[in-house]
Image 1 (cartoon, helix red, strand yellow):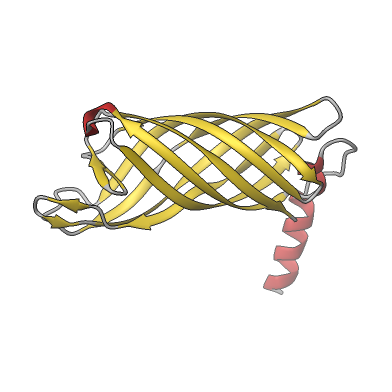
Image 2 (spheres, rainbow, N blue to C red):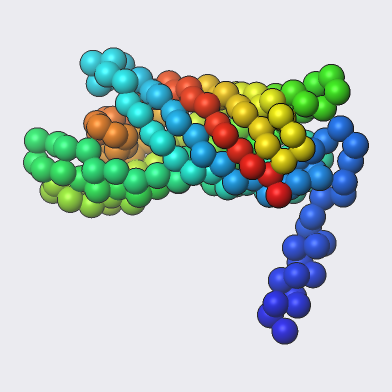
Length: 181
């Protein structure tokens, strides 16, 4: 019974196929990204973030998902901190030309659960704006680039290998390898 309800719900929410829009024809995104970031408060040291991404095209030109699913343990003066986190996002996109080049804008809310090293707050959160593009090599595989700006809203945000302080602006960029089902 539950499986039948879930199947009907998924089929009802699935976008209609559209010529020149592979994101609608293959709405589930599973990807890997490697991002590099710098925040002025960290001596402009480059931070890195290998991560997984999952997304779903809900309708024409609109997708939702969770990106930068990652974890780590950056050292602090009080000891190591462990974090695990992800970034729920809403994405608006457009295809250019013949449907192989895609541009997008994202609004996202990075969050993380943290522990260790005398932590005063076990939850990290930020506000993020992103821009990027994808090139669809095949209807089921794309390569992408992104640029994101994140403002740290909590008492710090963990990124390997550092803790970024409250109020810092993190500028990041990276590349994405994505499969579409």
